[in-house]
Image (cartoon, rainbow, N blue to C red; front, side, top):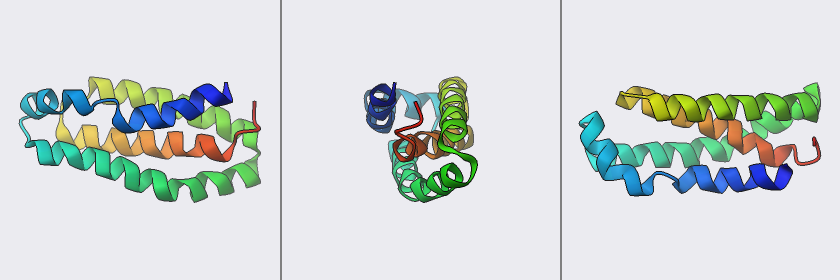
Length: 109
């Protein structure tokens, strides 16, 4: 389980590169603005490690691990169903917050 979720972090970073032109047309924004969702994801994932790591130390790794996996699932679903640029950007932030925490709780399973 821990190996699988570690793979998800890398997958989430780059999964929709092939869909950038389609997202740009669908949401009626430039490709550079859609690229901002990738940059934002990477930036948030960088600092979210410390937040989730602290929460794991305080609340316990298992509850935090389960919470971030559920949050990650919901963020993916919301990202897929998003039909606006602010929604897409916000849900990508939520994805990054959730999945970055999985590397801080590897012994929770």
